[in-house]
Structure formats: C-alpha cells, structure tokens
Image (cartoon, rainbow, N blue to C red; front, top):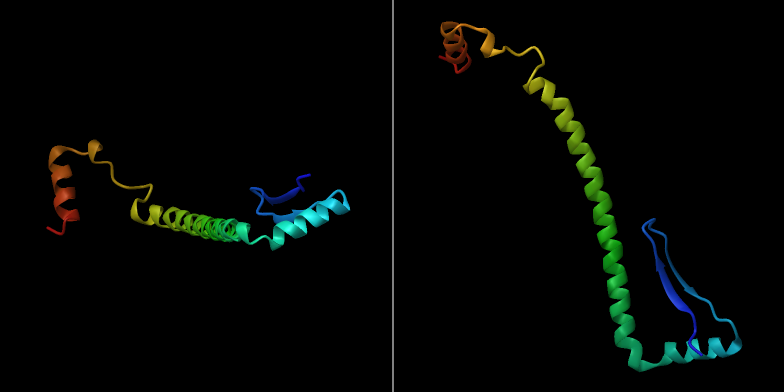
Amino acid sequence: MIPKVGINMTDTNEDTVSLDPQTIDDWQTIAAQLDDPTIDAYRTALWKAYDELKAIRQQEHDLTLRKNRLKLTVDALMPLVYPAGAEDINTRSLADAIRLIVNSCGG
C-alpha cells in the first residue's frame, strides 16, 4: 500500500506538507520510507527545490512592489517633464517655430 504523502504548493503561497495515513500500516510504511537512506538524495533535492521555489516567490513579491513604486514615480514625474499645456509647434508660423526651437535649446 502506498501512503498518501504530499506537498501542497498553491499560487496563494500556502505551502503545507501533509502526511495522511489511512491505517497503521501506512504509518509503518511512512516510517520505513523516512528511515530509508536510498531516498535521502531525493529528499534533499526535493527540499532544495522547495526552498528555491519559496525564494523565487519572495523575489516575485519584491519585484512586484518595486514595479508598482516605479509606476507611481513615472506617473508623478511625467506631468513635470511633459506638461499638458506644452506648446504645439504645428500651430505656429515657420519663423515662430524656429525661434521657439532655438530659444528652447539655449540659443
């Protein structure tokens, strides 16, 4: 009989490890597997992958926060750099447009 041993990793960051034996035989099987040295390499790999997954989820969270802060910064700076009442060069005569460009370049 194969025991029900599982790791539940959902997108809601609820990481749980559960052992759900149905009978005393399941407990004995689980105990035998936990003491079995042949699965130590697999167990080690499993927990390394599990830890790396948790680290990546934390990085995703940190990046999401940083991305939102940068969006707020861009939204705050955009009107300061490109104000809504900026001159439309297409409504000017050629001479006025040239004067505007030269003056804006410091000339």
